[in-house]
Length: 88
Image (cartoon, rainbow, N blue to C red; front, side, top):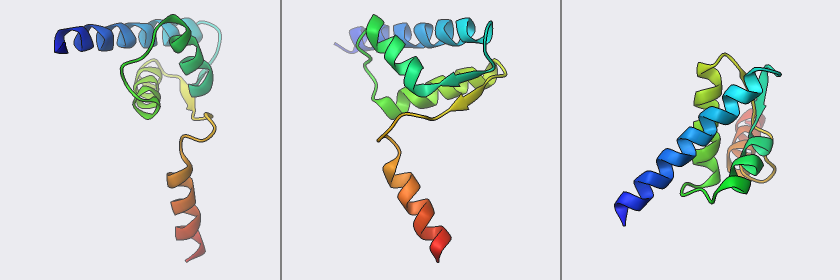
């Protein structure tokens, strides 16, 4: 079972790298929303959305691209904490 998960994770990493490489030829940024939609159309990811965002971000930064964390509803805890800290 773990072997199948390792293969699936490797496939996701390859898809992320291919997506970022394709984006880098036309654009200077990667949208986490668009990237995740594209990757999930090809395969069901064995990792959760936040981990996929981080994997995309690491790969994009390595390629010199900026990252737009634009998925709605995946960062509410972090944003509400930041607002509360700013108000203090």
